[in-house]
Amino acid sequence: MKDKIVTKGDIDIAVEKIAQGANVQNYIFITTEAVDAEVRAYATEKYAELGGVEIAILDCLSFLRHFLHLFHRIRMDFLNRYQELVLGESDSGVNQALKEAFLALRKAAEAME
Picture 1 (cartoon, one colour):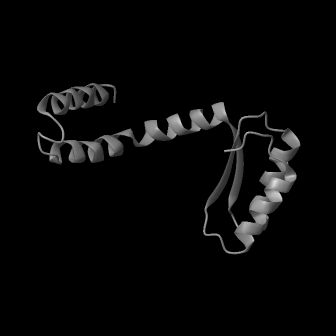
Picture 2 (tube, rainbow, N blue to C red):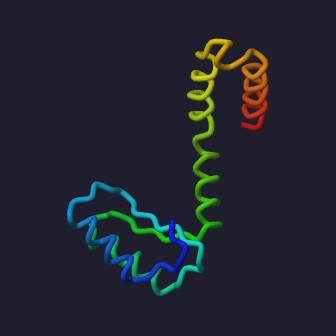
Picture 3 (cartoon, one colour):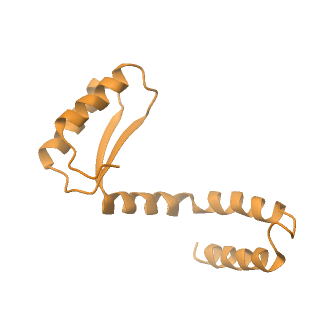
């Protein structure tokens, strides 16, 4: 997360890190500033050079949209795992009322499917 604009120099540093062996599939910059179209295009050009590693630049709102879309796609996996954790806790760790509230929310989520 950067509290400044992403530059071509930032992209070059990311390319260096990846070239030095950083084991990544995607390199994502999140910025509080607007994303310059020329810098975005420069990052896109690096895809082939990096053998399929994507460098993406997202402003904060685009990142939230991306995260919410991802969460929507995997929400049932998340709910299944969370349910295991919640129901697996003793009543002293998670009280019965909270477990029942979670199950009600889970039922509502499944109804939306």
